Amino acid sequence: MRIDIITIFPQMFDGIFNNSIISRAVDKGKVEIQLHNLRDFSDDKHKRVDDYPFSGGGGMLMKIEPIAKCIDFLKAHRNYDEIFYTSPDGELLDQQLINSYSTLGNIIILCGHYKGIDERIRQHYITKEFSIGNYVLSGGELAAAVFVDAVARLIPGVLGDEMSALSDSFQDGLVAPPAYTRPVDFNGWKVPEILLSGNDKLIAEWKLEQSKLRTKERRPEMED
Ligand code: ADE
Figure 1 (cartoon, rainbow, N blue to C red):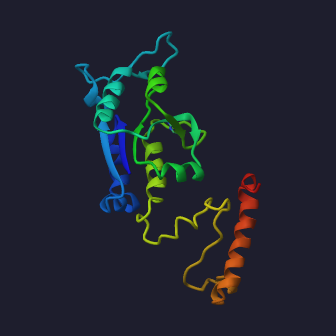
Figure 2 (cartoon, protein in one colour; figure 1 turned 45 degrees about the vertical axis):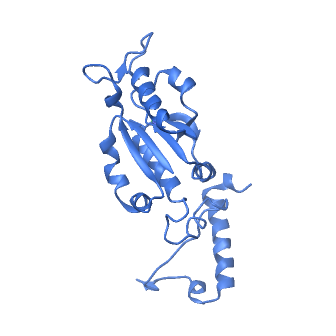
């Protein structure tokens, strides 16, 4: 999968993309991430990428020309399956959407800023918009990073244990059961006996039961 990210803060991605699963995915050649500084596509002598909205209303908007120039430049080199825009009013991401996006080949993610972008970009360039939650971030970079992390870990060969993504919370409509590691007894707080029993069938039943209970408690809306 190739991901082109258009941003005014490329440095924001350094720590996130150079560590853990995403850097492993990149090192293994499963994901290629290219960051594009939107200011490089501004013809303005001050490299401005924002302007005042018509009719006032406060706040600035991302200008149309640098974004159009950047996307046109990228599209001249390859075809894209989707051109995403990060926006609090976009489609709310969930595991099902992430699963389907993890099968895409080439994508662009445009990180929003200020009071948003000129509507004509949304109409003529953007094919999908996503939100990571019903709250407003100061920019789309964190949302783009969340998207890349959630998608990259699903690409076959990225996670060491191939099964582990399948047993994640949400993959089967249930949240994960409680999990324990050593020691068996910490200050008198004990690991449930069943997990030490070695009986795979009973353990699987217990985990499913616990997942169901947790889903009922924490995500009752997922139950139907
Ligand atoms: N930009 C600002 N807030 C956002 C959100 N919640 N999701 C995606 N992009 C955003």
